[in-house]
Length: 153
Image (cartoon, rainbow, N blue to C red):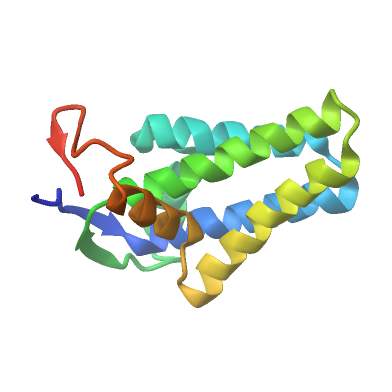
């Protein structure tokens, strides 16, 4: 099996994680369930259409462009990062539904805080739980080796 290697800017990933932490914390502190929905939407759109992810666009068009954050380009497969982002988006979407429509405050906020905690761990300790889950699922053959005509691990 051949892994699809691409260029990934780890600074963009870190910016994305930092934005998740900040916005989810603000949502929790001020009980802004709409902000949970907003972050979920940003993550899900960014997963399905990586070039238009809002946090990445802000990073590339502002922070990177003006030298506020320096790029950290590495060659690696981006699929596991997109999987992790999508997983976070799904958890936040479920959290929003629980909070807004099912009146399940404890479970809803617990899911949001779990996403916040895992993004914070990734941001500070460089351990991506979503990437780990992706690799474990892939190891057990859950994913097809060919997705969209491209070879993946």
